[in-house]
Length: 138
Image (cartoon, rainbow, N blue to C red; front, side, top):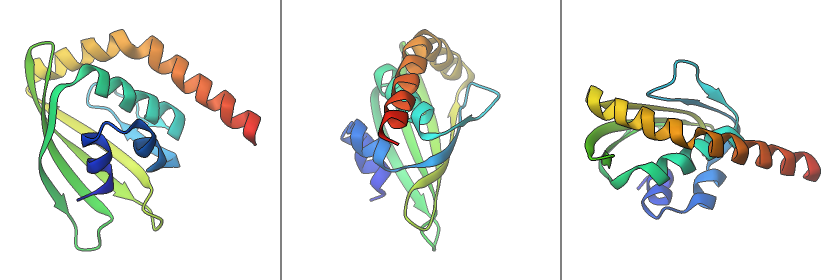
């Protein structure tokens, strides 16, 4: 089982963040511009776990080299069923360097966009706090 899948299914926020490379790029299903960096990506993923209900993976597809994978999932957002896929690319150390999420149907994507929009103030605050903590450590 892919480590990311295991961490998400366990809702282990620390394990999820530990799997992200510092320069990870997150491409959202509902935002035009990708998000770069571990702090904002980790915060977005925490927000997603807050808004998805009944989230579960239904299939995992991994390339022969093990660096590219697709995790197909189902969830509910505000009463709307969402089907989606996490496309993941890892580096040589097994850290996630690229995470692109796609969802369907359009009604589900709209529900996800609205729910994440309500979370975005908190997401930004969490990302800023993590950046500040990292700067104190460095």
